[in-house]
Length: 145
Image 1 (spheres, helix red, strand yellow):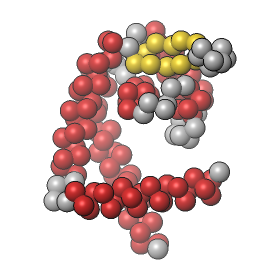
Image 2 (cartoon, helix red, strand yellow):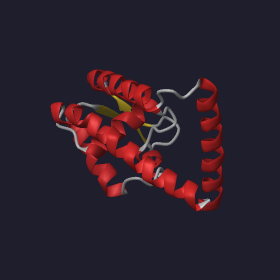
Image 3 (cartoon, rainbow, N blue to C red):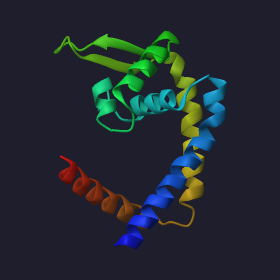
Image 4 (cartoon, rainbow, N blue to C red):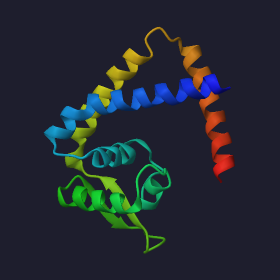
């Protein structure tokens, strides 16, 4: 089992760094920090991630860094913030129309990266991998709570 853990940790970290390197030019072009880019990607990709609290639940960034990034993104017009109709305490975050160009560039980069990374991997193998990762994530979430 230690071999699997080492394999996952080392290579997931390499994949994360590769992903960051591929996105550097887009971040420079739009003067975005890593957290800004991650929040934009999160809001554009995961429809259940709609609030700062949702983003914080991923436990990747501190609440303070998330708040600063949201303020920066809002000031630049990359995201909009509105009140939740059912809970006035909740602020709903959405990518703005001006962010579509960023999202399109990021999507193209991520698609090309995935194609390279998963070269030679069959659809069946990808489905098996997804199923195993879902189980692992479920186990982790069950332990963490």
